[in-house]
Image (cartoon, rainbow, N blue to C red; front, side, top):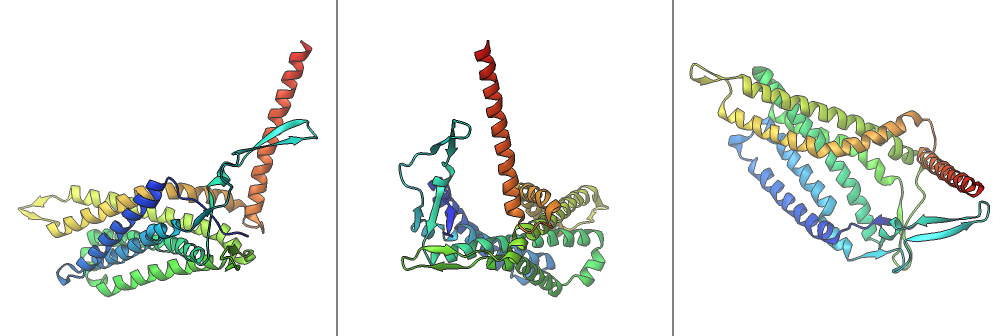
Length: 327
């Protein structure tokens, strides 16, 4: 099977603005990572934020970092000037059917070995994005414990344990995402055309069924924890007033709370669309996990429903025309 992709259009938004924001984001995350090395501000929270900066920077690079180079090697699959609608005649029902192929005109091919790089980067972007989700959730949990149990937190939550949490998030995300990279293999011919082999049945089932369900559950739990953490932080900041001229929360702690609150709010807002998408996938697949070829089954069912609806509309039009002729 030919290695095909959807072209990232429009050009100005995806080839110019996207990589520009990607490089700015990467530079800013590098600055944050280096700044938090200062021993004066080094805490378990800052270590988690360093891991978050690394994950976000790599995610940005994997998403748009190579796009200007890939754009030089994209080749349109469809012929230029070809019609966007193909008309075919059905001899059984004696009517013409119009089939739209406009969507296929956005498909492009990418030459070898750039297709391999693109394939790996797309999976690495998902991998490090999940790391960002897990680390942001860990930040929320750590801040709740720091506010609710300050003495216990200072004794039990150390910098070393925060490093272990960061490494665990990276390893856990890799364990979930790396198998997806081996669902197919990519090879080339003499003209550097990129071909994708037939997917492995076992890994295909994991990619199409198990992984979307796991990610939907993880994302739902993470967003729930973030929202709960944000509400609790706001409640604590509003309820703890100054007592006898002494603040129950230090200025440094307030700044830390506001920073983590901002990170979580931005993250929740950016993840809500993804939660809707994966929630739909979860709802679609959860009842058919026993089906061996669930993707083909679902696509076949959708085509069947559309064809039945189309035939029903044709029948209704035929009956209405026949009634008009009778009158």
